[in-house]
Amino acid sequence: MDLLQLCRTAIFMQICDIYAVRQNRNAERLIMKIGSVEDFGKKIRDRRKQLGYTQKYISDFTGLSVTFISDLENGKKTIELGKALILANMLGIDIEMKERS
Image 1 (cartoon, rainbow, N blue to C red):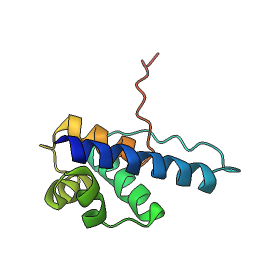
Image 2: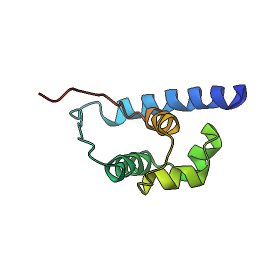
Image 3: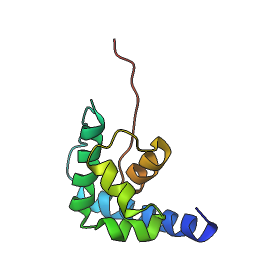
């Protein structure tokens, strides 16, 4: 990503965070266990649609290709983790890891 794309992504993420706070002000925090790439992709797609964004709109702001976003949402197993985490973060999804007991 070049500097312009990084700036646009940072601004877009702030807008998403503000919108998410307004949408979820009175809602409980939703925790979803991710057991597969399909689960992860579904969560990304559901959140994108909840926010009213198209894949093209996100692509324009992040520099991630529409093909990558589509592959991620459809559970393609060879996606790049770094890009997937950027997209999740941009959509206001926190990724946490927890050891099983």
